[in-house]
Amino acid sequence: MTAVTLPEVLTVAAVLFVLGLVAIFTRKNAIGILMGVELVLNSANLNLIAFARFNGLDLHGHVFVLFVILLAAIEAAVFLAICLAIYRRFRDVAADQVRELRG
Image (cartoon, rainbow, N blue to C red; front, side, top):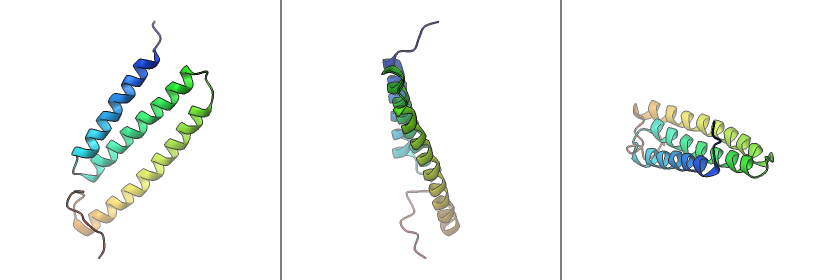
């Protein structure tokens, strides 16, 4: 069994990052945009873990990943609450049609 090298992990993380950016910029649905943001955050997590693993197994990368996961959970909760408010007001979650939430 062959070991995974750092360039292979960074390539996967770069692909995840690009897919996340494509999802962010091409989706009109707010949920699709959220999924793109989550892909970008997961690619950052993969980079942090890879560099922590291949540069001496220190725990700094793992601690940062826990903070990013916490941030992603908070961001998802806030974003979904905003999506619910948008849906209640406009009966649609198309992000390109919503300009303001003022009643």
